[in-house]
View 1: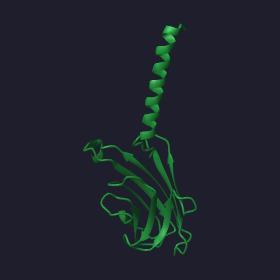
View 2: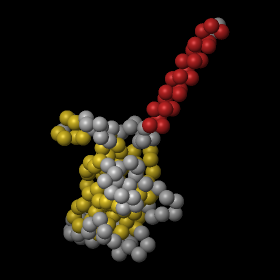
View 3: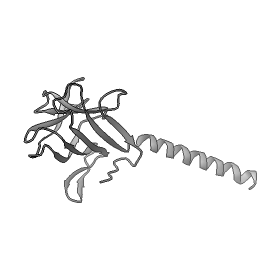
Length: 170
């Protein structure tokens, strides 16, 4: 390749690489959560798992028809077992736009089945980043049963797997 062709080709490769890196930094992938009992949990054998992702500006108001209103929407799916049967639980997160820091607010509540398990899928808005999620008995202020966190040494884990912005693997 002549020097004349090499310089433009190199420039194009650098620009394309930089654009790919910038795009990759913006992408968040899927958050995979593993819930574990907190110290003193009344359900020490309970466990849970889940996945969250962000869909940029898309609210699924009808199957196959999303409403693009510019709001980032989180999609979430969780499964729990080993909880108290027929009890209400709430998943709370800190850092919602509608709650003053460090307040936590509920993103979903559900009632467990007769065997103490539950599955839930839902969408929510108003969260900048998912750093910790807690499963509480009852409402927002109930005792913490399970937790998933990015913090080292905390109960449970949250790991972001690379993927497309708003990618959903389920």
